[in-house]
Length: 282
Length: 160
Ligand SMILES: Cc1cc2nc3c(=O)[nH]c(=O)nc-3n(C[C@H](O)[C@H](O)[C@H](O)COP(=O)(O)OP(=O)(O)OC[C@H]3O[C@@H](n4cnc5c(N)ncnc54)[C@H](O)[C@@H]3O)c2cc1C
Image (cartoon, rainbow over all chains, first blue to last red; front, side, top):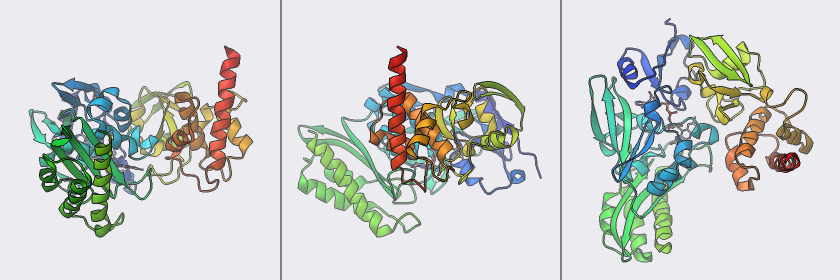
């Protein structure tokens, strides 16, 4: 049995030196990791690399026309940021419906991404905002688009010696939403979620990105639905067709939280609600 | 490692590994057994404490994550013998039945009222969604928060 230990770096350099070591696991908010370790005996636990103390990983800052967020930004900080409210309303909506106050006060952006769950609520908003991840190791760093980061449920391209050190994204177009369904409103993981980033010009869809959560092994862009909507007016008919298309693009499974058929149908329902909201807000 | 932090307004130093859960430190090392462990997985909120004034689950918090920070447990809410207005209101409206969820609910309610002195029912529901109570049906709890809110605002006006 190995004595569980903790590394609590103050600087990113120190953190990156420790991250590749054998038996060391990074902890941000701990809301996924410590749940996963709940039934693991103390002697069997990994050593924790506690990221909290690295101040530079907590920042929210404008970058170009968009934003750069540190991975340690919490859901609560996203929820309360006036900058994000204007520039990334989808992300703010997602952060404010997830978990509970207690969870949102600890759960981080980077943890949500690294955890790699297709039901992670911040992921569909990040997809429609074309987020780019900065992955760093002690010898350098690389950039990966969010769509290329996930390989499957809980599987990502993050290497053992890397940390997510920055999340950069565009500002949202003039219309956007995040909607989700779970077994109840609070403290429940999404069965289905839909995020969109839309710009309208003279009543027509000038650009649109739609992402679906929890209905495939990874979050999914609804690209056929997007193509269909481009250039169209948002009216009853076009919205109905788009909902049908999006349901068809989903590839859900039956699991403890829901059933495939229900999920598929709800993709259309949520997209319809969101698009109607946009159409009637004109 | 030597952990320095503040517990219920008192500067505290403990020798720790850094990997212990804060709930275990509080209950077993500091004897603050008002903090309860329900699920141990962040779902029930019985282990809620305030970290720099914000509610968090102490079952999902490592001791090394509270270095230099301030923890408030239910024991730290009252001042000597006099109850915090939220505690008094919980007792008065009958918002306590078995009592297991009460410390967490009182702390979450106190944090809410510090942030929003006169919350709507909707705001209360959002703020307390992370604290499960299987006895009361929440009605009395919302009444307690409303009573505490009225009393705290009256007290504040009186002091001005
Ligand atoms: C009761 C409860 C309810 C929840 N409800 C929701 C919900 O509604 N919606 C939702 O999306 N999630 C929910 N979650 C899951 C969880 O809160 C989120 O996924 C959260 O974002 C995880 O972040 P964290 O900082 O706590 O991650 P941690 O647990 O600290 O880490 C998770 C994983 O990511 C790795 N990691 C963390 N940061 C980095 C980094 N910067 N670089 C590389 N790797 C890193 C860790 O090593 C670990 O493997 C819930 C969890 C609980 C316990």
